[in-house]
Length: 396
Length: 58
Image (cartoon, rainbow over all chains, first blue to last red; front, side):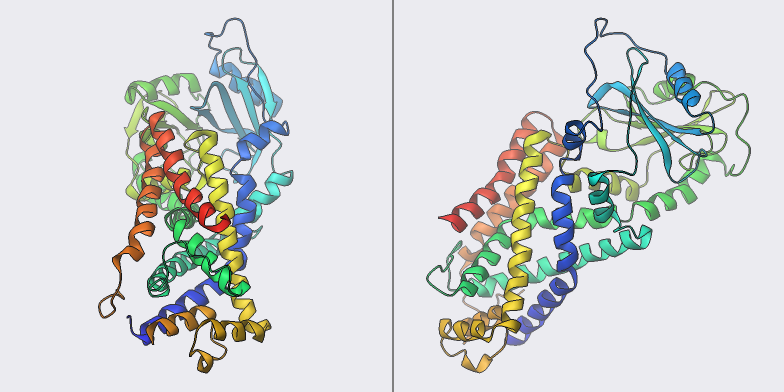
């Protein structure tokens, strides 16, 4: 068998990475559970709207007029971007901030793309779901909070890898799925911890690793803005936004001509962080399921309406963009979200049973004693974890 | 890794590897194809849930 020494080393990794991260991972799993259904819950609580049935369903409203309506409602603010959702092709979303590059939005409007009618203003920074999201995203601690949670994601990955290594020797004398119900509660939970952990391994690994990648969103986009975007815009930072800005409709048409067969994801207005003070930047997505997750930036001169650059995103931005659906589980309809939720519940049980097994060792010496009777010859092991006791019994 | 000097039975890993491969297929299928891809994703990712439930609750 693997040497007792290497098992001890892997147990040490499993124990400590888990101990460091478990509280935060439990918080992430619990807040994440309703967040899987963010979209559905928003609809249900009236925070977003269904598009009304209209008679002339094929109509298209002027995007310029929609943007004007948004500006008139908040004349003190600047339009930051206009966005589209492939799932909701009859809606336009308009985001405004105090300035074009303000980090926070002041309003987020939904317009009917067919009639140009303002349908809804999203309630920003409020409500129970927002609280859950902030806890999950940065624990109200800003970028350091986000990066800390990313680090917890890395602890999870280390914990999973060490857990897999320990699974082999542990199962040497047991068949897959064995839950020794006739034994102590501790043994039963140890078996369940191993079974549920190994069964959901790849899903937890992928959701954990993509979650960690998502925590790097701000640095990743920062790197792209500082290098590739700066190169595309010719480093024209800080200049005034042209007064004779062309219409967004014209900019969008130019972007569609530059990347035929693509759909708009969002178009950033001059001065926004995703473009320069004198360009619109349209971010186009492909038409296939995979390419619809990726973006192609197109820069349009806000004075002339000419496309000045069409780029591809570097690998690290594409990796981030692909990490998002794999973390959120929002890419396969409602059944996939339900599957996501069930796997999340199992992950909660794995985390909880891990805490129970560790606590039991410290708080209740009876646990260790019961354990000793389960594994003959283990008396000398005393207060070691049940897992290590079991492993030692297997190797002797 | 750990199996060289131990009389490991390879079947220890049969079920875990099967579930790992099914999970990977499920996670990928809906990403690369709509319709059939979504259905494959639901079924493949339901496998670890079903196996976990079956052994835990029986």
